[in-house]
Length: 534
Image (cartoon, rainbow, N blue to C red; front, side, top):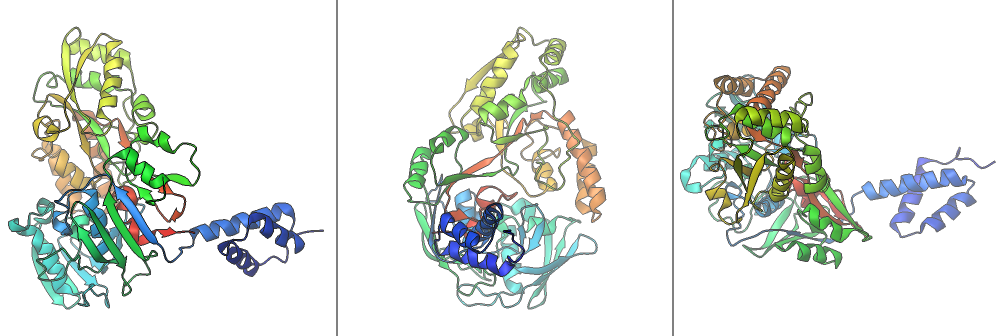
C-alpha cells in the first residue's frame, strides 16, 4: 500500500530544490509516485513545497517600480519629505529608530531599545556596528542631530509640530541618547517610526547623495525623474534581496498599468478602483491591497449654516449609504467606516462602535426638524479627494428620494485644498494614515486642531487627549481612546463612510509584499523586503 510514512522533511527539501531548478509539477509528481507516495499525498507535498519556495526570499534581480507623482521638489531630506515618492526613497536610503510592523506595533530598527519609566524622559540605546554609506559609524550624535533638525524653522520640517514636544537631548555615551519631552507621551517609540524621523549623519547639509544607513546606496537621484539604488553590502540587516532598485513616476494611470503589463516595471503604485478592470483576465499579475487608514470624509462645518443644526448633521449621517459607497464608489476596495479616524488596522480601534445605518426615514425626520426639506443645500466636491465625486453622487441620489435637495458642485482639483477644504460649509476631505490616535485627534479633532474639519469643540475631549497621551497603562489608554472615538463619531460632523484600500498592481514575480499601517507599498518600505522570482 502506498503511504507517506517514510517521507521526511529532507525529502521536502529535495522537492523544494527541484522546483527552484525549474522542474515541472508533472515531473515532481512522477518522482514522488515512483517513491511510493499516494497521489493525494503527493499533491499535498507538492503544494507544501511550492508554498515554501514562494515564501523563501530569492537574492538578485533589478527591481523597478513606478509611483503616480513626482516633481522637481522631490527630496532625499527626510524632514522635508511630503509625497509617497519621497517616502519610498527615504525608506530605501535611510533607517528609523523604530519600524511599524504589519500589526501596527513599533519594532526596534536602529534602536536596540527605547524605554521610559514616566513617558517623559526616554532612553534610546542604539544598535552597535551600524555604519552609514560613507563608512561613518552610527552614534548618539547622529540621532541628536537628526531629531533636533525638526525644531529648526530653517529646516522646514513637515513634522515640526510633532517634534516640538522634544525639549532636551543628551548623549549619555556614544550609543545612548536621552530625550526629554515637554510633557509625557507614551507614543514616542511609535512616533519615531514616521518617515520623517529617518536618521541622517551628524552635520549633514547636502542630502543629494542619500548618505544613510539604509538597505540601498544612492547611485542616481534626479528630482522629478528617477532614483537608482544599489544593494548596501554592509547593511546591518539581512536585506535587501534585490541587487538594485529603480524608482520613478508615471502620472498617467493607464500608462502605469501598461508599463506593468509590458514588463517594464514590477509594481505600479496606487491604482484607482475604476482602473483595476484593465488587469482583469491578465495572467501573471496581481493586486496588493492595503487598508491602512486612508479615508475620504464628508465634512459639515458646525459653525456655519446648515451644519449648526444638529438635526441636519444627523440627517446627513443617516442618508449616507456606506455599503453602496464601498461597493460602487470604491469598487469593493474599502472597509465600512464609523465616522472616526482610527481605522481597524490600528491596535486602538474601537470595533464595538457601529456605523450609522442607512435609514432614509430617520434622515427625513431629522431634515424636517432642521427645516431644510424643500431647500437646496450646496455640497462641494472635486477629484482632489479620492472618490469624492462618486461619493457625492451616491449621497445626492439617496437624499433626492426623500425630497432633500443636495446641489453637488464639482470644482477643479487645482486649488481645492486652499480654496474649499476646511472653508466650505459642506465639502469633502482626504486624510492619509497616521500611526497613533493621538496624532489623528491632535491634528483633526482637538478644539484648536489645525485641520479641525467640522469645527468640533469639546473641553472634555481635549482633557482626555492629554490623559491618554501621558499614560503608560495600555488598558487605560484603550479605554480612553474608545471613549474618544465614540465622542467623535456621535458629536463631530465628519462623516467617514469607509476606510479606503490602497491598491498597488504587481507582477506575479514580485514576492514578499505585505500590508502596513503606514500605507501602500508596505508602508513605502517595500524595496528592502521584496524579492523577484524567475
